[in-house]
Amino acid sequence: EEAFEWNNINQRNRNPLLSMEIGADGMKTGFTEESGYAIVGSTVADNRRLGVAMSGMESQRERAQEARKLLEWGRRAFDEVDLFNKDSPVGNVRLYGGADFTVPVAPEQGLTFLVPIGSTENLRARIVFEGPVMAPVSEGDEIAELHLYFGDDLAQITPLYAATTVGRGPIHRQALDA
Image (cartoon, rainbow, N blue to C red; front, side, top):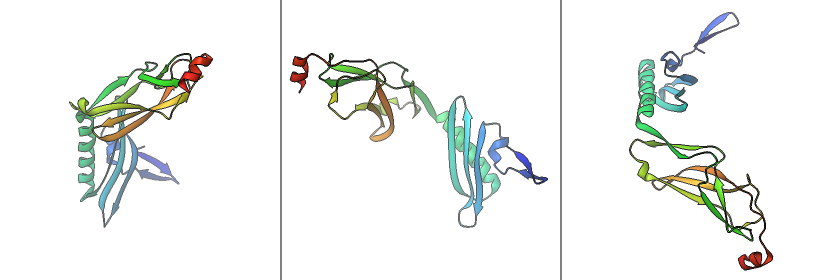
């Protein structure tokens, strides 16, 4: 809120982002002699939340201008990439003792990722699980994780769930897998 009344006193919010019509919905401003003017801010626009945290500004005006610049740059400099659709398997996990050799796994929701414009080639994904995964497996069981890497850095971990039910296999299959 840009202002509110408390105890018959009108309290004005000092967050300059709120009046800029950029989708700001919070957070906090501050000042100390040691660190100068500071801000932690949050905006939501086009279903994308961005945050900014900075200190060391020499004035309230500089704090407002620099925070706005960073948030606008964040909107322009990144693409939202749709990686996987909801209910679309991203791969298979090997099963032991199952009626099938593998079970498809999928995220609970569609999976998107923000990347710097033009750099999707730096994005890699790996399915990680602790095995062996023993049959039976029920649809919806969490059995793996999708590790997303941007370059060499682990950027996100997303749970993966069995997309189908796979029962226990015949005794000879269980023995062979064992």
